[in-house]
Length: 254
Image (cartoon, rainbow, N blue to C red; front, side, top):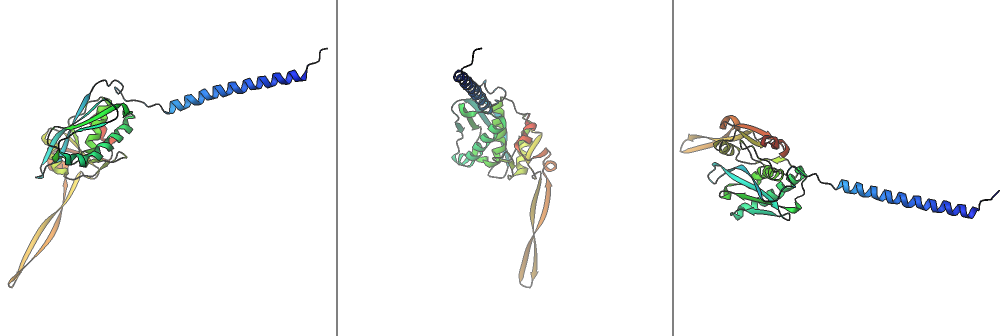
């Protein structure tokens, strides 16, 4: 009977073990690579990858002019192949200084909601009329809505208008001039006016002066009467309070 050489047996075991280690290492590295690739995958919105030329979305923005009257202007937001720039076509430099933060915040919020990689696309913002009547912060929510629509290639419901500042977390902050802005929305044909949470009702204090003459002197005192006004009933338009941009999106058809 032939006896096995222990040295040769040990060598075979060692070689077999080395082959197993190399195989597991190779398979494991491929598995790890696949996992890393999957976690970096970005789901692009509908029609986003089909952007080959510039396209625009329009939205009405309510504002208050220097005389306290509500006005509405058209804001256009466009997207085109580029290098991640933000381009602004606004003549009034004061508006730009006041609004640049709102535009940057709107872009970040829109990108977070759509999960789109905008590094290879440029966004273009422009206003049709004198921009000095528009408060930059109060246009933030409208800018965000239009940016989302431009990225996704969708149309907006023109029967809806919105006012409110946009915050980095997507919430909508309070602004002024709600009643004149609601009037402007109604004048251009909007049926629904979206406002920040808590601003569907306006509280004002009306001064009342009483004077009393005592001898040769007249003494006057001023008191303030509280007035609570429902914006929707006062203007004749449906007013809806929204807390964040996702709540607002459904009214615009996004």
